[in-house]
Image (cartoon, rainbow, N blue to C red; front, side, top):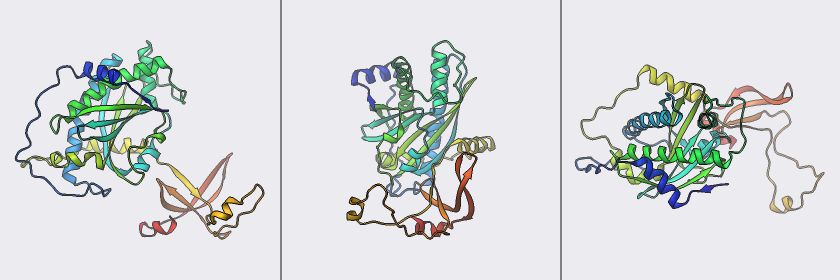
Length: 329
């Protein structure tokens, strides 16, 4: 259930953290606009993607300072990776535990998501209550108490102020309409097939490691697209080996949903309406035909279903060519 913060609560949280960050936005004269279609996933221009990466490297620095101050211990935050995903793939990859906020980038009106992994949330809460910042590894997936929610919301206000400051070199934005959601599956800020630009950060405390994600639907970035073109003569930095290694490690921790399609068929609406307990539905799949393993919503492997211990499992028997994926949709 989404808990939308009141205007007064949001104003107090962000204004308190915003402090003196009010420099005038530099004009964008001399910046050439670049034409491209934001409505097509995987089509963000590489220069714009690099600019987004450069912008959010500053956010990583601000986030590290905010978390370190809040937890009263050194917290390292690294930009783990930037990538483009379809919205339903991003939402499906987020664990049900943890917290996520939807928000609006005013005045563009574009929505976005900030999500924080459960391990990091629990470490922050434990530290706030005088602990060492333990993350309760093993799964403290319980609902947060009201006091704990207040702690997290107060910190979120400071993080959103950091995000506003991050965007200042590009455009003056104000974060509004913040809504907290403890189950990301209920967040519908974009259509399932819409493309999104994902920025992931790895935060390391003394006792916990957790990912922080920002999800920008490409439609939300469209009003800022011209400003995301690097100024003429700007030379973008190449990723260092350490950055590449951190990206690989962070990507390795990101969970991708998988499901096994054992059989398929089709029924008319009249047939569906007449189904009763005990009816047998004849499917189109042959008894010896392999199952299809979907990864992130895309058909990737042929497999044989079975058991491993007390769990259901699937043995990979072949890979599906990229050109053939649509045949299994």
